[in-house]
Image (spheres, rainbow, N blue to C red):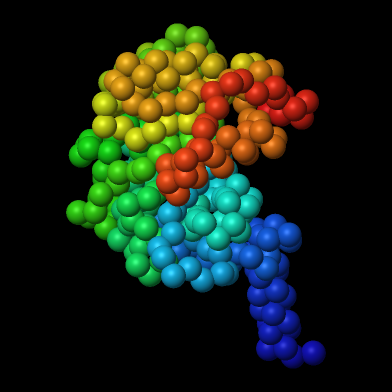
Length: 317
C-alpha cells in the first residue's frame, strides 16, 4: 500500500470528521430550516484570528432581518461559540432573525479588557456586513449566559465608552445594541468580591479575568462592571437569574436591575425560583422570545416579570 494512498485516506477521513462536527452543530430537527457558516473572521488581535458563526434561515427574505448575537459563558476561561447554534436555532428557524455566535479571547490568552474588545469588534463587524447577510443594522439584540451575560450587559451599558472599543476590527462603526438578554451574569465585581473572598485566589475565574487578585484590581474591577456605565439611553434589558445560584449570587442581578431602573432604562427582571447557575425550560424560552419580538420585531406583546419555577434539572449547574 503506497504512502500517498494512506495519506489520501487520512485526508478524506479528516474531511468527513470535520463535516460531521459541523453538521452536529445544527439540531437535526432544524437542518432543513437553517444553515450555519462557521469560523468567519471578524477581526484580529495581533496575529490571532477572531471568529464567529453566522446562523441563517434557509428561507429567503425580501426585507433585512434583525440579528440576535449570542455570547457564550464559561467563566471567561472555557466554552466556545459552537453553543450558539443550539441557543439560536429555534429563533432563526422561524425566519424572523439571523443569528451570530461570537468567539472571543479567553483568559488563558489575554486578560481584561480583551473580552469586551472582541465582543464590540464582533458587533461592529456584523453591522458593517449587514447588507451581505441581509441583516437590519438598526435591530441587533445580544444574549449571553454567565460570563456571556456579563459581556452582553456590558455591551448594553457601554455603547458610548470609547476606552472599551478596542482596535480589533472594523473601526469607525457603532457597537451599540438594540436590546440585551442577560442570564445570570456578574454586573458589579466590587460587590461580587465582598460575597466571595475566594475570588482573590489565583485559580478563580475573576482573578484570571482581571489579571490579579480582586483586592489589588479595584480599578479594573470597576471598569469591567456593567453597573459602572449605566445611563438613561441604554437599551432595554431582560435579566433572568436563579434564586439558588451559588456561582453568581442573585444580588448581582438585583444590583443591575436597580441601577438601570434608577436611570430610567426599560428593564424586566425575572427570578428563576429554585434555579441555579444555568436554567432553561419552556417558560424561560417564551419570555426570551417575547422580549426579542417586542424589541426587534416591534410586536405589541407583554414581557412578564413574574418569577418562573425552575424545572428540577435546571437547579443543577
